[in-house]
Length: 436
Image 1 (tube, rainbow, N blue to C red):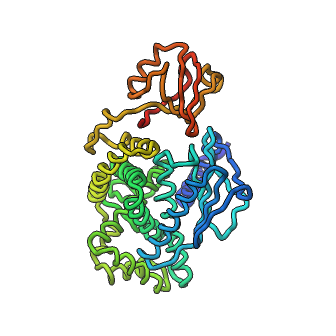
Image 2: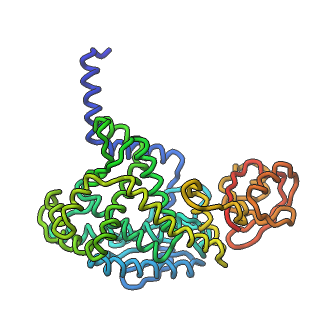
């Protein structure tokens, strides 16, 4: 048995370890949890075709030519925006198009040239993007990472600021979020609305959970005078993914608000002038911002109003909702599906939306092996088109009807082709509504 004083010392040691290495500990823990149910899939680039333009490259399998060309043009436009908006160059970037597999996976790319940033984009149908998250991957996430890398590279090459350290992450990630938003706003309302809603939700939940109204952007975390900081860090560690979303959202708000008041040229001037400072201290960074944007914007770094940020996101979402409604009337089904996916996840009490009148059907999001439906041939990702020859127009009505159905003919859409199956029931199928 340990003596009481030894137990106390061991406890203090572990508390200090967690306080100083909380992020590493959390990453190790979450990796273990994720790794339990997620298997890795290696992606070999040697069997992929390649198309490229300038500093942009896309790897793709047979049959994905159309989507590959679309992805390449997106990358080219991203590169141009980074150059025009910030006045700095973007590194070479590659995208890998891979078919989504039934189980949730983590993708590992083999044979990836080290000079390229490789971003796997998983899609159910390699001809089109069909989920809101896939639009986000190509239109927002990739330009975020490209922008952050370009900022870090430009500042490091000048022997100056590094955008990924604790003091300056809100600059690299914040400006990267700003370009992700602006690019998606111009080219993909689906991606813009998908990510803005995510940022709005996480900021709202985090601020309510810890009851704070001001945000310390410089330290990339929330500030509350009612809770001691060490306890706050420990409790936040258990909600790390949510905290990251709020951090990114508040950083985006800061730069978007500065841009709105001072103009896009101000953001560019700040980035270019940061290359000239020799030591990346907060004081030097604040000096650059003060010289270009004014002391008010330095003060706001440590006292950023959460409610103002929430109103900003709400206002931007309200501007995007009409575009999503327009997407519901698109002749292209994948646009209708992705637009509906975003709309149905919005808070109906906050936003003026009514998805009840939208024609919907069902998609199988999960199916248990061994069930009659699985043995008959139904699979995850199948879109239910009709039951006994009757076209489905309402997901809610469909759910009620299938409770009393036995031995039915089901037509599904799979990979762009219609297939028919005879099944006993939908028992063991997890279904979700999608736009027709």
